[in-house]
Figure 1 (cartoon, one colour):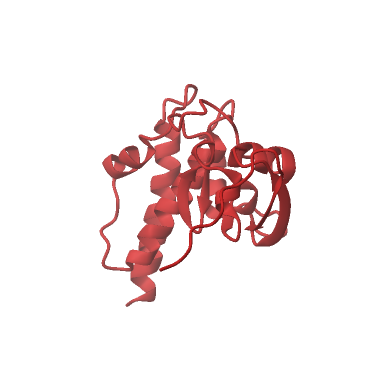
Figure 2: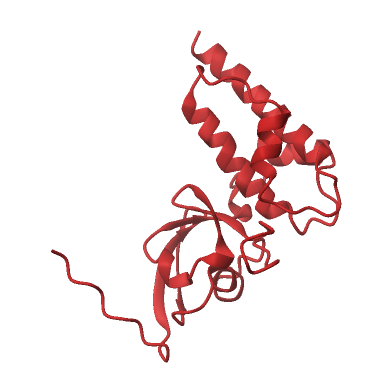
Length: 182
């Protein structure tokens, strides 16, 4: 049986070491500091936006250990020793946008941009899950994309250009998987 960790003191800043977008980073946080605030204020990763602070709007979506999560529902101390990816980490090291970001640009899938970072992170996670399923996975359609996006609120785009961008990438990746397995 393992012993439980002692409770964290609310009057102490606790060290938090994580891998943020493939780089080792450290900071300090009180036990009740949200991951959104830690990323933005302590680590300077301001691409993660704070919207509803209730996990409803999706603007704060990041990936923790590869899984899309709401940063406004996660405490900073919970990511100690873990991998966190934010929208800043989607582009290549030289700043070249990845295929999903390029498709968003081509389809004008953002307007005010407030929700875009969280949507991109959820889409990236969803597309990676499709990639992991391999060539046998069926090509997704509009219904599947809209279902995946249902956890996000975008007040500007009407979702149509977002769906078109995600479908373009999903279809291109699906075709590439089929060719590589042929």
